[in-house]
Amino acid sequence: MKYLPYAFSKRYSVVEIPTRGRHTVRAIVFQPPHRRQDQLSPLHLDFHGGAFLGGLAEYDAPFCELLSDRAGTVVISAQYRYTPAHIYPCAHEDAEDVVEWVLKNARPSFNADPDCFTVSGSSVGGNLMLVAGTRAKAAVGICAPVDFRIPPWKKPKPENFPKQDPSSFLMPLFDAYAGPVRDRTQDDFRLNPILKDVDELPQHILLIVAGIDILAHEELTFLERIRNERRARGQDERRRFDALVFDEGFHGWLELPSSLVDNKADQKKAYDAAIELIRDTHRSLQDAALETT
Image (cartoon, rainbow, N blue to C red; front, side, top):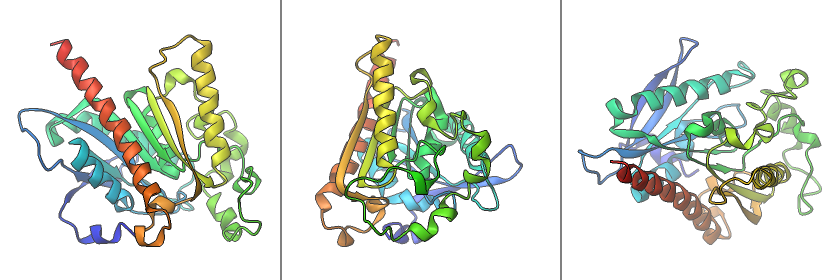
């Protein structure tokens, strides 16, 4: 896996973030290699994937390092509590606490600007990132589940989805976090961001969608709904709610080493698009701040 070399890397530092539950969650911090100490750097927070079952902050380290290097951004990748020991809302509460701590400590601990804040996440991390709400000015989700009202085995499958799903026997495990509370969370927009009002979302959202993924339908439905909602309210057309669909992509394909992926250009295209949105958002926020000084 791409993240394995980072297990021994000195490119990042490690912090322990306190939470409301009196436990801490681990996070890694990438500082941009070239920065002026008299200026605040933009701030970015990432949540890794893993079906809420486990994982490491290093899972998204290749993307986090690339973003830090190319956008001059302080990038923090955080963990959270995992199921089956911890079901909803544990991971979401951890994510909320991480957001609060990161924003509060951005200036004193990382020389970063909390007003120039963006988020990202892979798989379930793309769900967790949205707890930041409007405090995040842009969000990038990769294969992000946004609707847990439906169990995974009932989600619409794309036409090109394998007739024999090799992961079907794992579906009950994939449902261990949200399944036990499904009946009472049908209207819960924190667990189901597909229900969130457009005014409760970041200004810009990019979803990187794998065409061979049971999450593709809900991701595209989510974006279409918020686009329509924005137009109906006559809101600023400069707000971006975009999808970048890779027809041959499957869930988790961006985390694979390039040597195992047939179309390496697609991996590069996905990362380039994510970094472009985040970097452009940071620049526009910095320009706006300069105009007011």
